[in-house]
Every structure is written in structure tokens, then in C-alpha cells.
Image: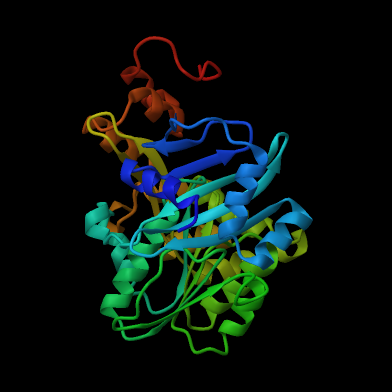
Length: 360
């Protein structure tokens, strides 16, 4: 047992989502969205470095020493998996570990909208799950992939950096590939995927032009592709995909994306105020013919209106989703206001001074 494993056990027992270990500071865990100190003395740089190197693969240590940053996955059997990020900072080394539960929660257990499990049965197309870091994108995607694994008879291929949720093959055959360990890059894995007879491809992060272009190509050639982006709503997600391409290619990409896109799911995490825990507000865009025409014609500014009129297709705006949580008494009005798009709609619920004084 590695010395650092005691921190991971404490983290799991406390129900924490993240563990922060930084030279020169007291260790901290994030519980229900807030950082809390662990009763432990400030970490010495050499002591922490020794703990971190004990669990890191040699090739990852080499990359860390050359670049100052590295990501990888670490697993403690029968406890949990962790996504690790090592970095250098002013006082020495530092690391952040994200807990990846060993059991994949179903869509019902997570309380996901029913339309999300229907996405798992799509024959082809591109589905994007977006949101800020820590908004639960990986958890939502895992639930959708799990539903496909239990209901389809297909080949599922995941490409991640690092591998997070591990799906055991059920009705589907599931293969996991990790960037840097099993393949050189997301783009290289996507290029190879087209020769590996996949039905469903999950891309952990669509972070560059080549990866996005290949994901769209895969969706256009008969595959169901799931990917993530760090965007905050459906309209900005569509804009982000188009704008990453050179200006002269954008008219063609608008047309191709309009044909390939099936849905955009944007999510925002909230701390619950009624019980310990967190909850998620969703914005869901379904690519109906009307929505595809807006994308093709460059009228993405009209997407919010299309969402408002598309309730019967399972669409919902972020503000409507936030309002539902607020009326249930699950979330704080201040946080609802801070994360809403139409601030004026939420101002009547806030008493006292605004926490974000730039909002008027």
C-alpha cells in the first residue's frame, strides 16, 4: 500500500470529489463544492514528491520532469479510481486528484432527464456534452454509455486522457483507449477508430481542430459519436465548433455540422441547500430540422428561441432548468442568479446585496 493511499481512503470516506496536495500547504478535500482542510501538517516538498512518485508510472514521471504537468489515472482495487494531475508551483510540486466512483450510476439514479438515455439508442450522429470543469460531464456520459452497453449489441470504443469510468462489456463489446498509453493522441485514435469497426465512439475531450474535424467525419460516416467541450450553453457550443475552423472553411463546416449534430447537452453544477450534496441544471438542444437550418444559415443566435419552442422534443433552456431547481428549494437564489443567462428573471428571488456586484 502506497503512503498516499491513506489520503484517498479519507477522501472516499468523507464523500469528497477532489483531493488537493500542494507543497507548503495543508492538504484539502472538496466536499459538496467547498474546499476543507485535512488535519495534517503542511506538506514538505520532498515528502510530497516522494508520495507522488510512488504511484506514478515511470513514463509519466519523465513527462512531468520535462514539462511540469502530467495527467494519468490511478486505481486502488475495491476502493475507487482517481484522475491525477501533477504540476509544479512556487513552493514545489502539487497534485489534484478527482474521484471516479467505481460503480457507474444509472441515468435514473442520477436523476437525468429521460431524453438523455434516448440519445444512447441513436443510430449515428454527433452528441456533445458540455459544461465547465467539474460540472459532471463525465458522469453524465458514463450513464449514457452504460445504458447503451446494457441495451445494444454493438462495439463501443472510448478514447480518454486518462481513462475514467471503466465499463465492463455487457451486451456491447467495450474497448477503452488512453491517450499517451494506448495511442499518441485523440486525433490518432479517432483516425484509427474508423478501421476498428466501432458503432459508438466516445471522445473524452474535443480540444483541437483535428480532433473536432475527425469526430464530425466519424459521425457523418455512420457512427454515433459522443464528445465533450468546455462551453457553457448550446448556442456557444455550436459557435465554438464552427469558429475553431479557418474562416474560409466555416460555411462548409456549418453545413456538415448541421447534418451531423444530433444533440447538445450543457450542464451546470449547483450546491444543494436542502440536503448535503449537489445537483445539475441542464440545457438540452435537440437537432430538429428547424435547428439544423439555423446552424446551416449561421443563425445560432436564434437557438435559444428554438429551445424554448422545442419542449415537446425534450429541449429545455438552462434558465428554465435552474428555475425548476430553485422552485423545489434545492438551490440558493444567489447561485441561481450567478449562473443564469437572463439575470433579471432571478433578481426577485434574491434578498440583500448581490454576491456578484458587477451584475445590475
